[in-house]
Length: 221
Image (spheres, helix red, strand yellow):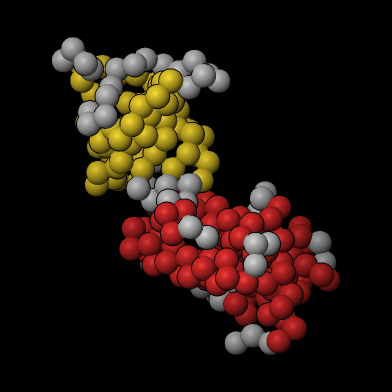
């Protein structure tokens, strides 16, 4: 996998945003736009008016989730929507915990999708992607802070229980009960369950299940 690809993993993010700043003529503006994707560095946005240029500083907010100043890196006309697409680099973002957690998993899922694609290209690509996953883990923790994560044993346990019972029954017995005494631990397993084990990305989901099958076959700590 290309080094730049590992550093610029992007994931879809559809949300209404409010963009504020000063336009090309020095007039203040506030317009509503929408986010289309994000990376660890910034956001891709669609806005209806051509009011900014590279180097412009704007304020971006997603109600109750995100507030940040940002520098416009590039702009271009989006032929499909007729709007202006801009890429911005965030400066000291204030992000709610829920969005931080969601962002970390979306980026991980995007990376897993790239890993699955690269595995088909041969052993050398797979080795590079494993390095990329370790780097992404380090990046996410440095940007989002440490999160309680499900252990490999807990992941394998979840997988084996899904072979014995329905997902609904598993959720009732283990995630909506007192099976996990520690709430953070229970939430970590639930996040893995819904965001990775049942990922909407088929390639990412297949990669997770394949890894768990291998872990169960060889034993896990």
